[in-house]
Length: 279
Ligand code: GTP
Ligand code: MG
Image (cartoon, rainbow, N blue to C red; front, side, top):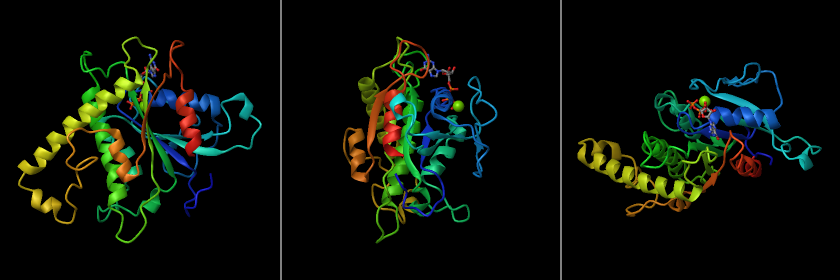
């Protein structure tokens, strides 16, 4: 779809999620099936052209590939190419600002959010997670760190919506697809359970963070120019967190299962379809 922004950037999807979720593996698979090797673009990010992203290593730099939304299924092959960017980001906790800065870019001088028009080329977030380790009873469960990252990401999008300048329109929404990966493994939770576990854990994080705010003496300063509830994710004061509370901030959240590797799993078609509908 044609973008109305003045930005020359292609429509872009941000690939986010904790370390080891399979983001770079997914990028590589999409590139094999729908990519086109191009010379490095003029963006300040490295492209995957040339070297294959190393799957065995934690990503430290964002990598983007140019993909064609009109490929992947054979019936689409002859159609006019529809280019978009998939932007891989590192999942390591210390590097997560890479993804968040795409959604809520800050002015380097003032530290204040830049106008949301700077993000109008971003058409969605693919939040990938490892469903095979998500169960709270799994050894080394990834639930807590996955939910923490997702909480920060959703709060950034909520701020993007609610902190736009007074009198101006809300920015175009950025939908989130929670992609429950590794469903080829027998320990993997199905998408419905992934959703339930994440909602419960985000609810717990929400309670502990609101207590933290009250307990610390800095509350007055922090709240100074913000609305009450500004740092509360979802419906203010609600007891349970549910993803559909994000609709109040024009943020659509969906959970879809899939698998990048293995032959037993459901594959990546569901995620691809979601992406193609949004770029
Ligand atoms: P960071 O770069 O650290 O943020 O991690 P990442 O999300 O890019 O993870 P990466 O793509 O490097 O994948 C981590 C590991 O998971 C690799 O060994 C992949 O082969 C494996 N993996 C990815 N997808 C699947 C899957 O669907 N099933 C199984 N069984 N393994 C997978
Ligand atoms: Mg990676």
